Length: 286
Ligand SMILES: [Fe+2]
Image (cartoon, rainbow, N blue to C red; front, side, top):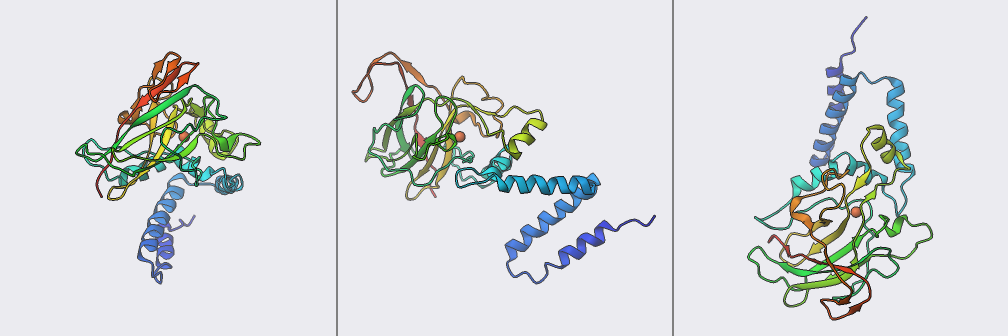
């Protein structure tokens, strides 16, 4: 039986890109097609398996909405998001590490005064987050913007709650002249990624657990510094060693210090126990 010439076929496809004037796009497409052809040839992918792949990607797109991004989740679960972050990171010695943004960022959170409470309507134990934004030498960075979001104490983001149309546990804060920031939110729980879509089903079929350790997201930007998209992880919580999206960095694990009810660091009186979370963000100069 005559053999199909896979190398000649690949070359024919690559040659068809010869008129492309966008050099970077051509480079990307050439690499993608090379790897895709190699993958199909190596696997001897059957027509049935190929159509399963098409159906999987079709379903991944079909479940996406303005509040659900299944492709980002898929990228996260396959480690591609963490890889992209890692190879593009600009990080000075001992400066803040980046990690994945995840699929639950909601653009347009309100800018709030320092010390504001974004835990209204959010389940979970209260936590006071505070510290400074600094440069690599430890000098204060004034007017840095922190865009904060997290899930709740039960492991759900606002976007996942049925009937929830308003933002919860989200806000933007600007550092003061001494580089200080502070706000109240909750101690987030670990959570499973959505399992009712193609990415979650893939995760199950790979016999991997679907959980992320508890964390708070931060996008931090300031004039003269590389913007950082990162997360702080709750120390001693479950899944720190096996985050399903491979996002945990030891430098981002923080202690949540438990306090009895009483006067808080910012002079409020709380009737319940709460946590304080001190953390300084050290930015890398651009
Ligand atoms: Fe998250």
